[in-house]
Length: 94
Image (tube, rainbow, N blue to C red):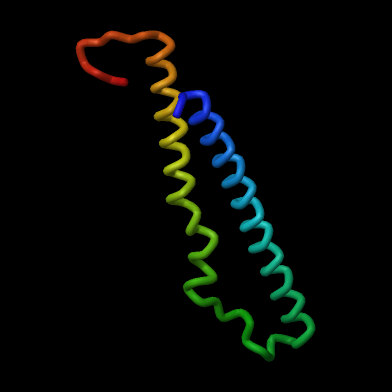
């Protein structure tokens, strides 16, 4: 696969992940709003303020994917720079 297509794919994956992260946080915000509405309606009688570990951890499950995408983007840009500059160093950095 050529460097150009790799760059395009990484850009698309990054954009898609940013969109999904935005949607996850928006959904999390909507969930909080719904819970507040339920608490107002039921006057705290249904115990909706008890959060499970899954509800707390779920928004942060994207963190490893984000870190991998950043490393991939940096690695591709570093490789592209080395190819464009045709760097010959005693220590192989590319």
